Image (cartoon, rainbow, N blue to C red; front, side, top):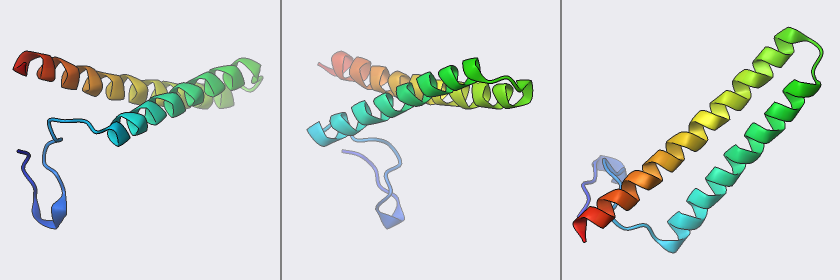
Length: 84
């Protein structure tokens, strides 16, 4: 069972992902992937190097978020496989 703090905030995620959790994770991955692609395209079309650098930074931020979400998901899968 997972631990909770005051105010019903979880200190650690539950051991089971619900269907709703899985759908939301899928949405988060898709949103970040789309933002990465749009930033990459916008940067490739940009003439101003300062603006291009900022757009690239934005795309890299979304890529980091995508990678972090995927890493958390992979860790969850590995933990569940080990406990079986």
